[in-house]
Image (cartoon, rainbow, N blue to C red; front, side, top):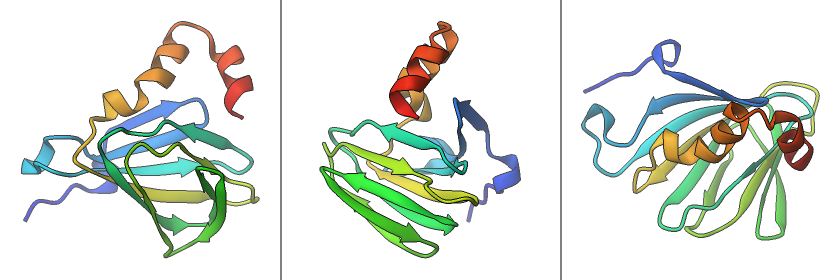
Length: 136
């Protein structure tokens, strides 16, 4: 058994999103899964691109918010699980006042660098203000 503590997970901060990489692609001996703990602050929205090959599940671990996929928006709360099929555009919105956190699991595994590369590139190139307007 292998354990990665949340407190030891690498953190990526992209605009207002905080992703804790619980298990990146190929880590801890996993061949088929990757997992991230995603924190979305109150009032923030986060557009996420679809992945052509990976199924994705979100499990809400704190708070509540809205997940949308292909025009279907659902309010979700602690304990809810959402399945996102491959090639499905989806987004997350924390439309409440409190914390909203989810665990995201991909199969097959998707590397965190690939998952967040578009956002990290925009942040690194200094286009934060323009980029924020599109996604918040």
